[in-house]
Length: 97
Image (cartoon, rainbow, N blue to C red; front, side, top):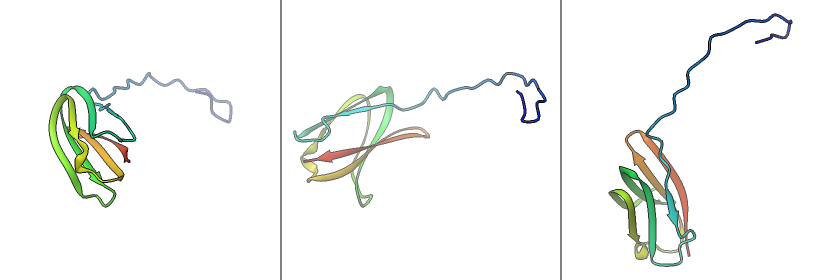
């Protein structure tokens, strides 16, 4: 590294480890017009939580791989779909028409 004053210092390499438990999931259709919401996660067990804009839990379950939600539970509006795997959580917005 070269500092602003022109001096140079060498630093040892740093090892960066990524978390193997990172969550990535897909959900469709979005916006939801049909009466089935499909959530696809990994081959590990996930906790699925769907909340309304006030934070109230509308739907909660555990699944592995693919899960189909009966969306007749939801009225028109915006919801937050969260997938949890241990300490990792990913949340996406769901629009229901």
